Image 1 (tube, one colour):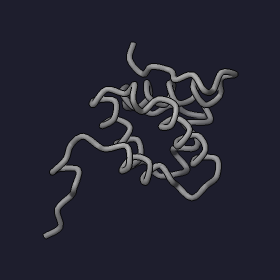
Image 2: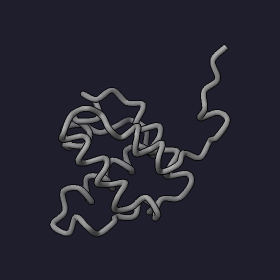
Image 3: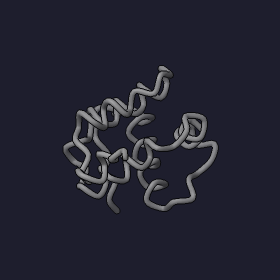
Image 4: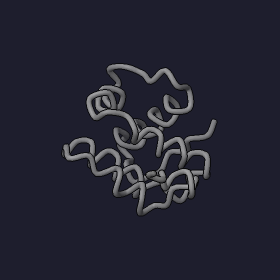
Length: 101
């Protein structure tokens, strides 16, 4: 029987999220790793769990969402995608954008 480590440790660490953010496409890597570098410390534990769920998304869907061509149906993920887009595509990219409303 395989045990999902996320069940044992429900709060993902920066190292885990950084590893899972490496997707194999330069564009996704830059967007996701840039977001983590700029704002991981500002994410609440709930935001970190939502980010981990976001990373379960197939790359084509993730790219479509992050480029603004479609929106996720899950409102928590949609809010996070909006924050990632705002941070990634702003002129002040070194400024973290809070996820919370």
